[in-house]
Amino acid sequence: MNEFKLKNGSGPLCCKGCGRQNNKLNTYDWLADIPGNAEEQDMVEVQFKNTRKGYFKNSNGLHLEKGDVVAVEASPGHDIGTVTLTGRLVKLQMRKANIKPDAEIRRIYRKAKPVDMEKYEEAKSREHDTMIRSRKIAESLGLQMKIGDVEYQGDGNKAIFYYIADERVDFRQLIKVLAETFRVRIEMKQIGARQEAGRIGGIGPCGRELCCATWMTNFVSVSTSAARYQDISLNPQKLAGQCAKLKCCLNYEVDAYVECQKRLPSKEITLETKDSTYYYFKADILKNQVTYSTDKGILANEVTISARRAFEVISMNKKGEKPDTLGENATVSDVPRSKDLLEQESLTRFDKNKKKKKKQKNNSVQNKDVSAKSEKKQNAGEPNANRNKQARKPASDGRQKQGGAMQQAVQAQSAAAEHREGRPADGRQVVAEGGSNASQQPRQNRNGRKFRRNDGNRRQPEKEGNTNASGNDNKTVPEVQA
Image (cartoon, rainbow, N blue to C red; front, side, top):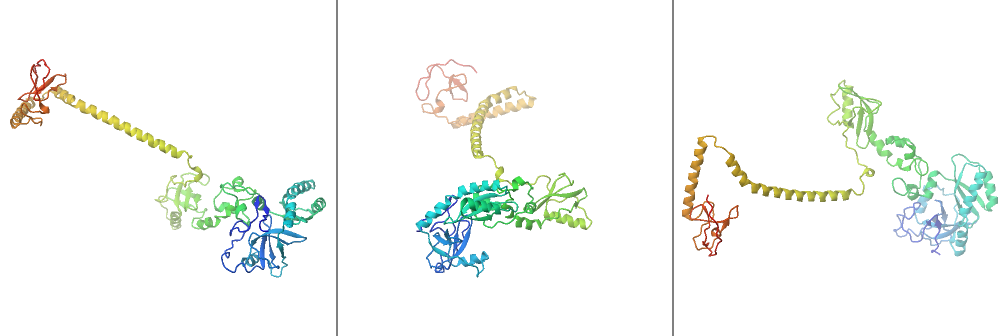
């Protein structure tokens, strides 16, 4: 009959063949893979609804596995539960639960039958209506309590009422009324606010499921001193959880903060310098840095130094010495702050970077085009500019004129020598008449007139009827005098 599943709230309490850890109340069975562990089945751990567990004796020698639904002894009648642990670890868990060896231990009757499961489902179907009616009855009696849940026994002969109350409640009259109304045996069980929040469940401010609803089984009291050790502002709206109590996670890092605070100077010690007196203002415990101020009440002339430098200044003050400043490690309101994940930019920050890259590429291409155009303009304007400069530049004295004449004579001699050798002064090769060379092709000056080179270095316009070296007829061009 292993196909039956018990319902605990919204999901199955356990099922056969489940892994080592499938529920926050389950014990990690680290002996599951060891041979011979399942042979010792004298004691078995059985789990019921609302974190209720019990240890029963397997007197009939049944072969039980984790996830089996069994019928166990109860007072009165029987109850239905699920096996959560077998083998050697059961005795260790009983010792942890402070169960004495001479205590009366109830036994397991059998594996659940279809008849047992029908009674169990019928009893569970009445739990919600019973809880609503019991709340109205408690309110009519004027009791300061809240009934959070109702659990019926497997055979329907007993009901357990879980309630929350801040103060002691006299519910003797309530038990009488409930017994007369529902015709079952009544048991009242008080639970805390944290157990109630764990039973309901939810999502915490960290974005994860509540610790009390996932893995926590033992709830330790949390005090405001845990927040003081961590330098957290005592804001009840931020420190309280969904159970209206202090968050359990305040105890997680207290030991680390207490250990780090031992390396910081005392808050009452002041630091004396030649300029002024510095008072303790705040501390970054994990970074081992202390911030001092020249005023006790407000933050004035903020200076942040390391704890090591603070102890050095304290030792100097004990000797009667005063440093000029708090040291080289001091930084005035320039301490880098640690980045918080919640203070990041929007999710579209990556898209903005892509747009910026595209804009940079477009700007670089435009700049290259503009620079190329400007270079072309400069190269085209350089000859005219040089000519204009040479034309506008007056001869300062006779020496400059004489030097210019000498330079022209030297250039003329070099041109004649190069012509005799067979190459002009500008570096182009001269080909004899009748050869095909680009130098003999007609050229155009700035006014669009064609000309060709003569034997000399001068440029002469072409006359009517002349042919170039390639034998092509050229158009007649009027003579142009220099």
